[in-house]
Image (cartoon, rainbow, N blue to C red; front, side, top):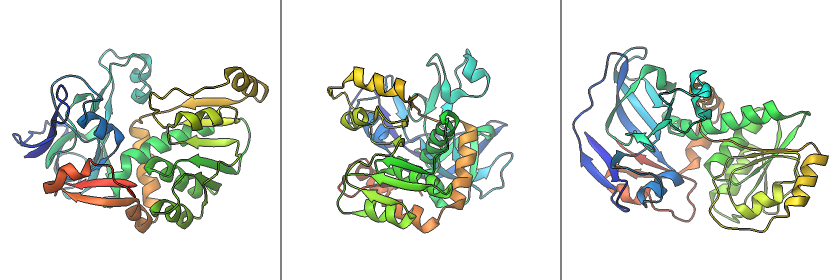
Length: 324
């Protein structure tokens, strides 16, 4: 099989490598890799900014076609769950909530400790495979992250709300907005892009696009921009999904503390997802307009040009590397 590999000890070591075909175990699927989504984490791994150890097959946003194995018909489209519980296990992993692992000993396919899905063949235990209905299923992993964000947002909400602000019109922000629209909410999206696909994608959802930050009290933050996060700390309910840079920005912690206390405010972070979120995300994608999901994928790159998939280009929303 062909696989995208990196040596985590050598920045810039991304290569298309011939590796032995995987042999599935009795409870595993053998899957033909069709595509992987490329995100910021993948680019950080390739640049040597994330991860330690030796050689790794990268790719955590997956889409494949089942060749053989229990529980799925041959030809079925599936995506694989990324995280695996730690071997101890901690209290969260023992309850199946391995996305909330408490001791950090989890592993993640294509990121930490386990080879990923960036290969023309891969195997996955049936319990970590989730069916999808179309090639838009390559968006299942980011959609699962957003499903979890919404699950936690609604759990923490102590008041009814009929509108939500999403900051950032990248893949996570757009999928968060899409779910908000599916839930019948008045959705507003803040981003700095003046042109390109982002405003059109937001407006075609039936959401409202802003280039100045509105004052909504319920926010899903999807940029990780420190200055923006600092402006949101006084809102009533804020879910942080973006991973920030190391940029230092001044924050009036006393004022933020006062606002949060006096307004019973909640600010929380969320990342990753478990099997429950993947399955719900599959249903979310099924309810979505397939043409809109396809429009989110602004570049599809063939495997022969794999280096281009890891480049950031103006106008990119979601980049997908086609493996077949």
